[in-house]
Length: 156
Image 1 (cartoon, rainbow, N blue to C red):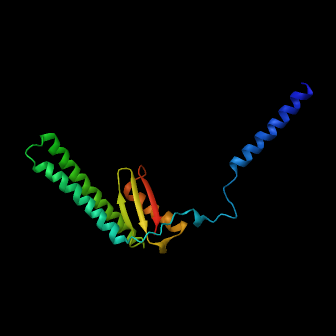
Image 2: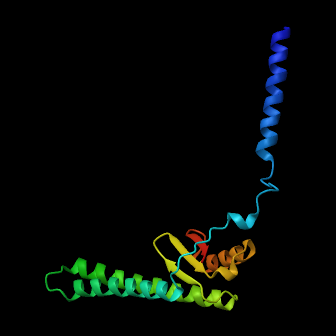
Image 3: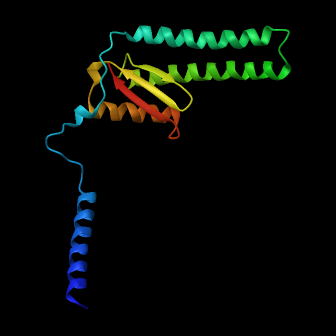
């Protein structure tokens, strides 16, 4: 093996080892606090306004589907689909209430829960802002919604 090939292989091996070293390093940065990584909104909306908006959204969906059912122009398939949508809306509403109750039992009272198709949003008061509380909230919610859904936790 000539001198150039040996030098190239030596430098290439060194670069490769350094790349592997930096990729496997933990992401501990002394100047970054983990609590800074948690998103916190400061909107003036209260949790009761969130809840009333969600209740209004559910009642609007139900009333729209009820109007389809009561319409004489609707086909049988449309009526069955509307019944299914009403049932799904009620299931979602009941699951949201169950998650709120589970969070209250887990000492996280006052949290708002909204379930959409694949995302479950949890908004908790600013008092609970910490990495440990976020982890505990996620574990409580994942027990109810399953691992296939995405859970999003924010603090206000």
